[in-house]
Amino acid sequence: MINTNNYPISDFLEKYFLHFNAASLVDAAKEYENQLEKGSKMLVSLAGAMSTAELGKIFAEVIRQDKVHIISCTGANLEEDIMNLVAHSHYKRISNYRDLTPQDEWDLLIKGLNRVTDTCIPEDEAFRRLQKHIVKIWKDAQENNERYFPHEFMYKLLLSGVLEEYYEIDLKDSWMYAAAEKNLPIVVPGWEDSTMGNIFASYVMKGELKASTMKSGIEYMTFLADWYTENSENGIGFFQIGGGIAGDFPICVVPMLYQDLEREDTPFWNYFCQISDSTTSYGSYSGAVPNEKITWGKLGIDTPKFIIESDATIVAPLIFAYLLKM
Image (cartoon, rainbow, N blue to C red; front, side, top):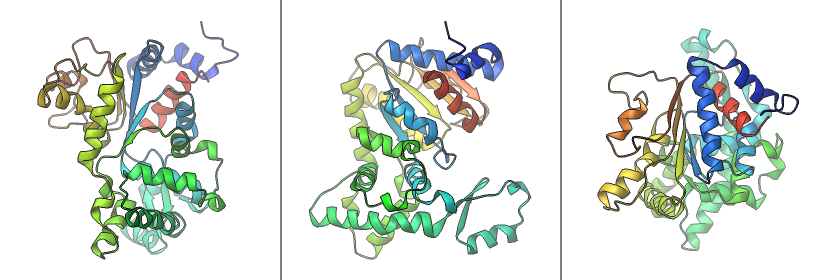
């Protein structure tokens, strides 16, 4: 029984979120909690620009309380949480973004402001501030004949302390810092299309870095396969925020293990929830209903499955608040 004096958000959800997508939200949150209580581990995938949406303000606590055990995220989410950490005061919010003309958008570019919906990321204070320090870490690794994953380089950057002089938000609100402190496993499929990925590629083209200094997507998949195999004794759940490669990449590890490696004792994901505004449609992977994943050998017949067709910036914090008993 929830104590209404201690858990106002959780109680509010159970009292008023009773039907349709609201009910799906509560059902998914309860089953997420149930999976953890049974000893299952959980993968959370982050698509879109959830870091720029400042999901870290609550997701960092989810990490600290061990309610997520591995993360799959886009390169953008990997870097943008750190950008928000070091350049928050330089961000610009544009509430009337729907009214912007092409000329307005061009003017933002000239000012070094890259827009993500209603929020502009400052190029000089965010991108270049990180570039100055991460390039040195890349080059040091190369000189020592060392190779790391993209997230491992970011962990080194955060834990080195070189960014401390720039911090503009409370460190407890950075999910990447919380993950770095725990050395939480992360997979970052398609990292190359992020800003830091583009910058790394530019140094490769200039001959200052070798592409091999950065571990690849195939290595991420084999790392994930080993992690899944070693941690699936009590099951592993899949909590997907948004669509795209952040979700598509990791969920495929199960059929790869089961079908391609012929490890027929590999268990399916034992929980699946997707928050998406991509409504069910023909030919849309992100809009595919969970049952379709049964035919691909990702989910079982009895896997608890949820899809919440809504805005992840609204839904994800509420589910995390429920898990944290807020």
